Image (cartoon, rainbow, N blue to C red; front, side, top):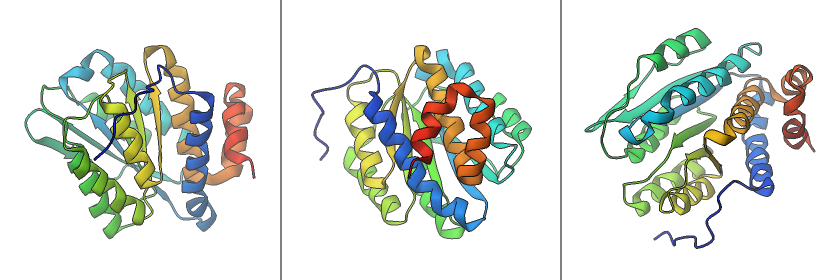
Amino acid sequence: MVKEDKSLTQRSSSAEIAEFLDKAKEMTRSTADSGRKGRLIFALDATASRQPTWDSACQLQGEMFEAARQVGNLQVQLCFYRGFKDSRYSKWLSNPSQLHRAMSNVFCAGGLTQIARVLRHTLQEHQENAVSALVFVGDCVEEPPDLLCDLAGQLGLSGVPVFLFQEGYDPDAEPVFRELARLSGGAWCRFDHQSAEQLRELLAAVAIYAAGGQTALQDFSQKRPALAPLVKQLTAK
């Protein structure tokens, strides 16, 4: 049973951001060194509670893929759930315009979270062809934490870390998201409408590093000076 964290934070601290980037570095090193394509599952909560920020979130996630395009070594599968047991998965995409089109056709609908389905789907995909990581963006949890933790643990044993971006400040979701990240070997990070730039940089950093390793990330940072502090943490030995 996941215990509630009584010291919930209003923003991700610098130490938490550093931990997130360290985890990203560990996750992507083997992929980058092997020369094979990175495969990233991008899962989204598309229930009604996220409608107010859906458009901006789509823009940020699209920019993540756009940033990785110059490396050309990243495949992304878009996943989302909404409504009553409605969960969908795209084919594996390697073209940013395909991702833009796929996301622009999604609309939010009321319903409960389906995070377990996302985790099970990731396990299945990984069994068929190795998945580098799962990125999940959501704002709440409405499923049994023990079930989710068991699935996250299975992903951790399989070497598939889960990177959770929590939108907003739901006090019940934070301890569960943190535990899913810990069990899978991934990381948790909070964002809101005031930290969109931070989210953009984190997504870009993870995508670039997953696609092309340290060299690609360093080249990218030369064109994006604002990313330099994050890049330094990712590439530190």
